[in-house]
Amino acid sequence: MEKMKGKTTATAGQGCLYLVATPVGNMEDITYRALRVLREADLVAAEDTRHSRKLLAHFGIDRPVISYYREQERTKSQKLLALLAAGKKIALISDAGTPGISDPGFLLVKAAVEEGIPVVPVPGASALLAAVVASGLPADRFVFEGFLPRTNKERRARLAALRDEERTIILYASPHRLLADLRDLQEYLGEERGIVIARELTKVYEEFWRGSIGQALRDWEDREIRGEFTLVVAGAPPAPSGDPAAKYRELYAEIVERQEKGEKLSGIVQEIAVREGISRRGLYQYCLEKKKGES
Image 1 (cartoon, helix red, strand yellow):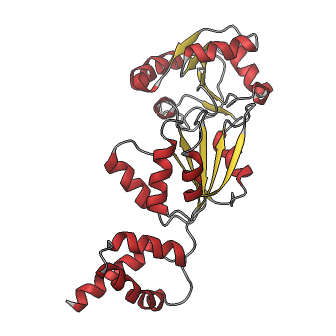
Image 2 (cartoon, rainbow, N blue to C red; image 1 turned 90 degrees about the vertical axis):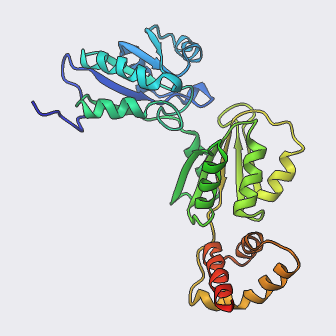
């Protein structure tokens, strides 16, 4: 029989996977629907069972809990899939916010969809949405990047790809990586790019810091860094209208002069592109082609 892909409601005796959003801090942010689903679930799959049991106990919910964390996501997905196929109702939750958003969940959802098992989202709190709507930066178009990669090669590639991104950029940052993230953002996006640092969203010490990336790095280097962070970064300025080559020609003499003084081309181009609000990639390519023609 053909699998029923895309189905979002369960029939009697059929299993169902519920993706339940939980508070990112303030317990009052949980929804009535989320509480009902958690009470009625046959099983709660949680990123951290210790953390989630405290959440369930807070609301007087006594349901079986199984761990579902990233290191065992693939093997646990198969176990949960078998339970879903047997007709169980499973509520998937993460430590905070919506499962699958920088948290385990994707593999299980993908497998359930492929098997025709209903997947039902139960919306609620989201750190990235809370941060962007309160940031004061454009929220009509944005891109969410989660945590920056740890490995240097992947990290450089991701930052380079974001350099000319014109949409507002949202990132997550852990307290012990915040300064490293700010240094790299300054290197690739420029110290004048606007940024909002949202700390401890919905909690007692909620804070929104607003300024430039350069100012943020100087300020936060002198602070005790605690809590969880969401970074909202202004998008790159749009490319100038008209013929960009004319602007590149105008700036080329300055670039050559600075290179003769020992500055690296990449650094010069990055600084000028931020200053002038033009495409770094376009200016850099123009310089390479110009030098090739001169030689």
